[in-house]
Every structure is written in structure tokens, then in C-alpha cells.
Amino acid sequence: MMSRARTAPEHVHDHGHDHSHGRGGGAGGHSHAGEENHAARRHPEHVVLDIGGEIGALILHTDAEMVGVEVEVSATGEDEKRTHKDVLEREINGRPAYTAVFDQLREGTYTLWVNDRARAREVRVRGACVAELDWGGERP
Image (cartoon, rainbow, N blue to C red; front, side):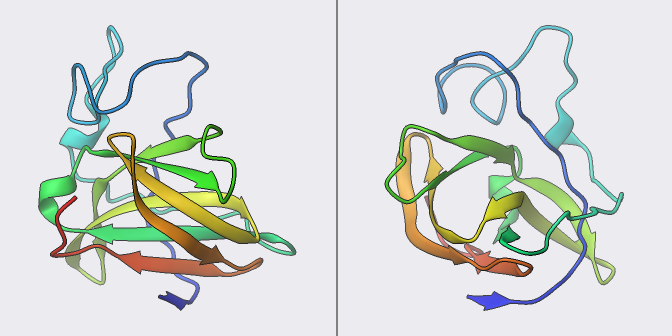
């Protein structure tokens, strides 16, 4: 994993209700009445990451098959306190890229989850940096 600054489009998918991940409607495991499928379109807009001091970010690179999949993140040792982002199609250097962008992460280590299963543990995020993890070509 390498750490370097880069901008990429972002979609924040936080909401204040409980739901089961990986089951039910939508590519990301759930849907909301009247809500568009945000992952169904390409995202050319840029991301502005608010990082600095003890706050960093993580960009997860995947392959096209993961577009719309909801990936959760939790601080190491806090498996029940998760937030999530959808894998979206974006563009980096004029080429398609399939990423989930986790911003405003406090410096430390994290677990990434897909369908309630830990997919990666001890993923290091440093303050004022953008960490990158590549799942391209891997299968969940």
C-alpha cells in the first residue's frame, strides 16, 4: 500500500438508520424509496479531501465488477462501529477507475468489510496522507 495525495470523485452514503448489509435491494445491498441508484452512473466530479493533522483518507481501488458494492470501514477493535461507501466508477488520468473513497479517517488501522465479512484488516491510514489499497483482480 502506498500513500500519496490524489483527488478523485466521492459519494458519501451516510444515513441514520439501521439496515442489513449485503442483502436486499440495490447493488450496494440496500435501497431507499425514491432514491436514484447513485452507482449506476459514471462520476466525473472531483473529490475534495479534508485531511491534515491526525486526519487522513483511504482510496480503495477495485475492478469494474465491484461497482455499486457497499464497502464498510471500522477502526481496528471497533468492528461494530462501521461507516460505508459505495464503489463508484470514476475517471483518473483519463481512464476508468473503480474506487471507494473513505475520507476523514483518524490516523490508525482499519478493517474493511464486504457483505458483513472482514476483507482486509490492519489497513494503515496516516494523518495528512491518502492511503491507497488495490483490490483490482481480487474476488471478495
